[in-house]
Image 1 (tube, one colour):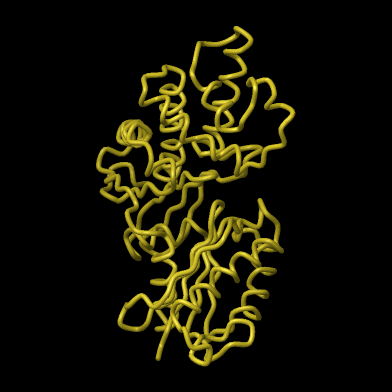
Image 2 (cartoon, one colour):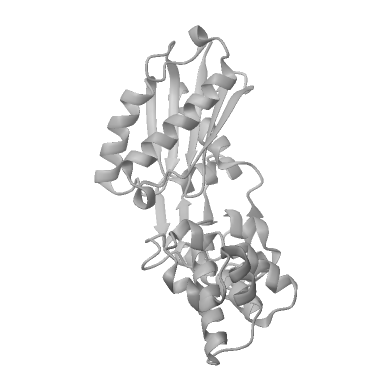
Length: 314
């Protein structure tokens, strides 16, 4: 039996999916975050392997039938893993070498999380994807398969409009409100409740990972829906900043007057109609024929589709 494995190694969780040649889903597995730039190589490799093993157990309950993952056979036809940071040659070399040993297959491909999201939405058609999850990035492929990137330079310097960015700015707004330097907002109260703080100033004593800060963004969206003006401003700012990722790619590709798809992916886009509306408004001011679509399928489905293409030699 021909089978293919796709893995979406994200900043929040890792998903693995087995499919056979007919397209039937054989098994799924889920593990923790695996962005090597945020959790390190060791943890990234562990979570990728854990998701793959869980998917293999679901797909092939009898061990003798499982694809070979650390000593279990038979081999896979192709494996595709999408994750952030692989455009950096040292990261790509290290992880690809590990992947070939950890999950033997006839063919392997290590690509970006954005590439598999774009494939999940529009296949191999030219287009743009903007991801806003824990972090953010813009990615495009032209009609020749050439890849282009915008943003995604990490939490310290970039990741505009991401869950992390919204969470961090919510904390800033809450502290400014506390001091009397900024507009009144309910964000401080919501953050304190979520993090079990006596008051918002105690947050400076609490070590928070980027993932934990990103986990605060749903409270910004909730406050915006409740009419909080600061939260609404932060959502609108996120939509504007994310549109700039897309506009930069439109300019580089020369697609200003062309019809093409712009895929919105990640938890911020899927959770907030307000962010999507603001994003679309600013983007269409520069590219009026752009067709903005929300990614409805899991990005891991793009990874397994690329694995099938890889096995077929496409």
